[in-house]
Length: 104
Ligand SMILES: [Zn+2]
Image (tube, rainbow, N blue to C red; front, side):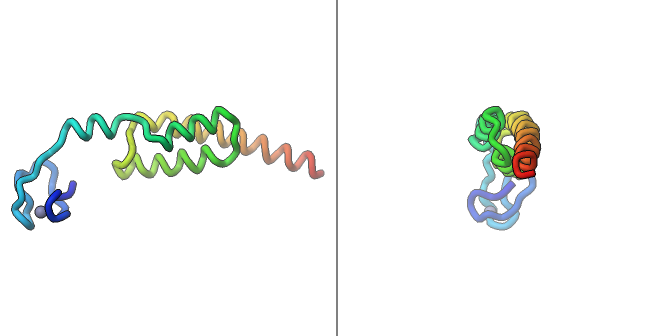
């Protein structure tokens, strides 16, 4: 976590920043409300995956998983990302086979 006053990295649970001595406020509501809901990327990954769009859901899902790991996107979106990546992989494989079959 970072100090909201100076940006110094502080330990979770600390009452004051070790650098600027600002009082640290831990927003439990914010983390539970914002972090849990699926992000736009995860929803887009799932929708493009279901819509059988090649490559796109893999990219979107990959970006969102990175964001989840960095705490920037909701954990509930992880299932959407994985579903989108799996569907996107199958579509990409089918797409590639079709292109090869048509070109041969
Ligand atoms: Zn500080």
